[in-house]
Image (cartoon, rainbow, N blue to C red):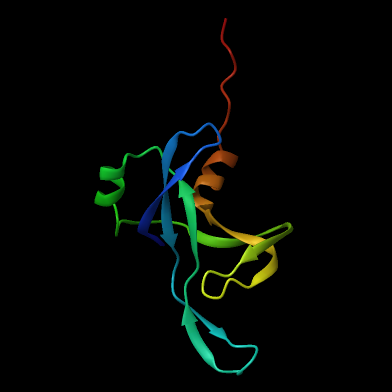
Length: 114
């Protein structure tokens, strides 16, 4: 399950505004590489929407099926918001709904009838 936690206003290359939803996944235990201690976290990602701002506000808290998964990418630089330190990443987090993939894989195209 994922939960809509927030929304953010973004701008297209042409200057038009749109809103993205901030999704948060399930809580998962993780072991720290530095301290070897366990802690809990959850992954987040953003997904574009066609909603106006009022609709985005109304759906905060709504849950639906799916997961947030790690997707490998070409290396890119990212500035950590807390410190401004620039690091290189080779992944991003994306929303994934396996049910939608299963449905898409099992769709049978109808042949055109004359």
